[in-house]
Amino acid sequence: MTPIRLLLVDDDPLVRAGLALMIGGAADIEIVGEAADGGEAEELVARTRPDVVLMDIRMPSVDGLTATERLRARADAPQVVVLTTFHADEQVLHALRAGAAGFVLKDTPPAEIVDAVRRVAAGDPVLSPAVTRQLMRHAAGGAADARQARARERLAVLNDREREVAVVVGRGLANAAIAAELYMSVATVKTHVSRILAKLGLDNRVQIALLAYDAGLLEDDGH
Image (cartoon, rainbow, N blue to C red; front, side, top):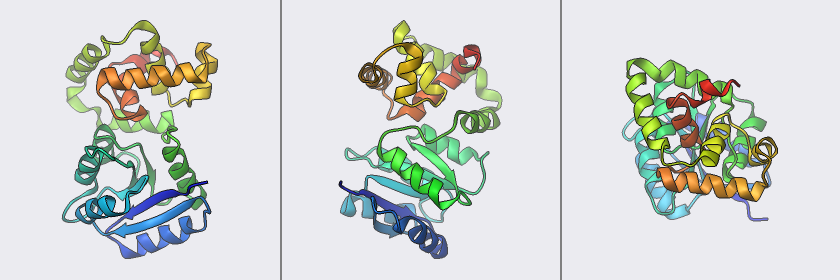
């Protein structure tokens, strides 16, 4: 099995050393490089071609948000998992909107960080629905009504079945659970998710969840 290629990005060398120690023991993950800021991360991504980047959100020079936007705009974009010190961080929400696949707290147990890297590499959701909603509620602010109108307008391009799938994706379910709930095969779920991403011009499932939340669909869903 080809190992997952991982790049570590944090301005604190002790944090990088700790992460390397925690993750280095996993046989299926290869740490291909370490960077001290977002600018260095961009250079290393071009050189080492990682599958996943574990990225601190707050760094001097080029921060994690800017770096995430730039990396996700690349043709060979790696998946980005954001590192943060606390849940309710508006910078994290901005990073998710920019295409990050999820986030983990710096004090997360090592096994869970390793699991998050594996899940992102496999295309599975990393964020629990509860944490995602807590974060979005915190950062919604006064522009919520305008954002809801824009989100509903964007979602209007989806057919009824795609809209159903988008709502369940928004609740953080993996493909097998979506298939069971909506009585379809896993392959059909993947096809619907791919179509939703293409129609809406989105990068990943997290952005589908954010859009569904903005549109108020998760509140209407009753879960």
